[in-house]
Image (cartoon, rainbow, N blue to C red; front, side):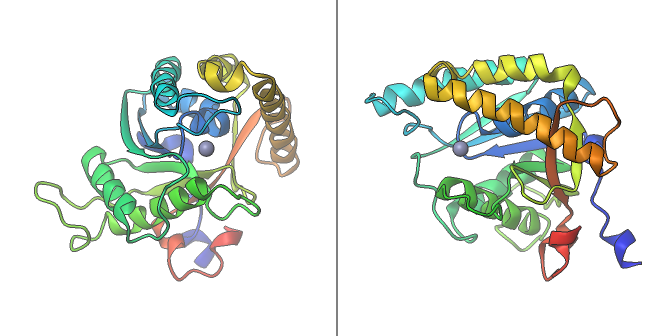
Length: 256
Ligand SMILES: [Zn+2]
């Protein structure tokens, strides 16, 4: 049956998770609760931050100093969530290159083959109205890397065996197929978010925090209404979880 073959893989069964975020704090915003839950269940979680985050301020600041600050904040957030390792690609903020054949995809293939995750988590590059190039370019490069990392002839590198992850989990998605109740880890997820003091101790940051809370409540409402979450769940995160089979020549993947 087509629908059996194309069932979304079960996110919470992942044992090794590689989280690829465009900027420091993206994963805490979109998936911090789920990451805390996965780590608490014994999954090994590794972070990859693509850019240095040096554009992330409304006030005039020294970009290099800000990048340093954000790096420290990310380390603290990862400690709170139970993340085991962090890799940094240090692309300049705002300048993640487009195209799936580029250097970022190659970096990601190498990281996937090194850490050998069963799940790669990132931001959904197909979210309508997402205007930040770092987000859609990172999401697309991750999707391509998930396809290519299992192909022995693609991006060959000495000492690294091919490895195809079982799934990719897109956060910040307009078409979720997987909901995760995060009530029990919300406090921890909030502490991780607030570790990013440069982002969330400002008036704009306060508004963003409120928005994220309201979005988690809305996702819980929708998940309950879809019969994907139990009654009583008040806070949720949501993902589009796909297998490599969905990611190529599959015109119904958006419905899965
Ligand atoms: Zn971002």
